[in-house]
Image 1 (cartoon, one colour):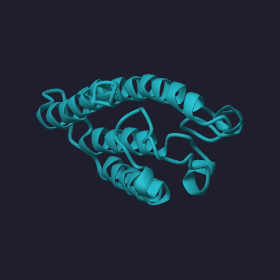
Image 2: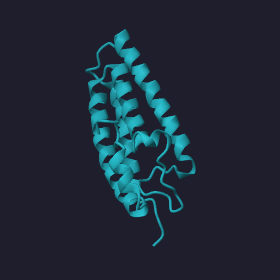
Image 3: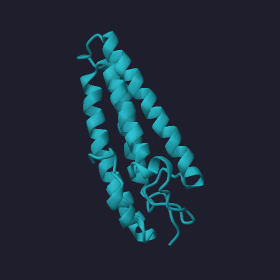
Image 4: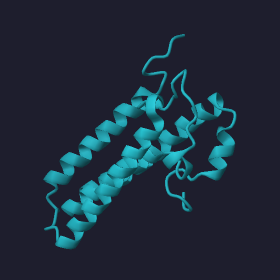
Length: 155
């Protein structure tokens, strides 16, 4: 049976984009949004910058192995260097941090709730992805036992 977007985990990708779009929309139109202070805006900008750096490093380290789907490419390799030596899912981390930066910058509680939903979504997507990775790469379990899922030293 050939790989299709559904068999590779396409619904996980659709879900993440729906959640990200919802965060953008509710953050902007949040009726409970308060006026952002300079400190909140500075924190949001700094966190957004960190998110962007993590994203660029992750994309660079993955190279041709980059795929939005949980299932790795048939000819893909396990990447354990660069940012992947510190966290197993830096792209998810960057998107969560970027969403948090947005909610802080706008002082939007609704966007913050969306960010929490996104974090849970990515935790579950990562679990699915790791099941694929453990099947494809015999050394994935050892790598996963040494490298944090999202936050070094915490999780």
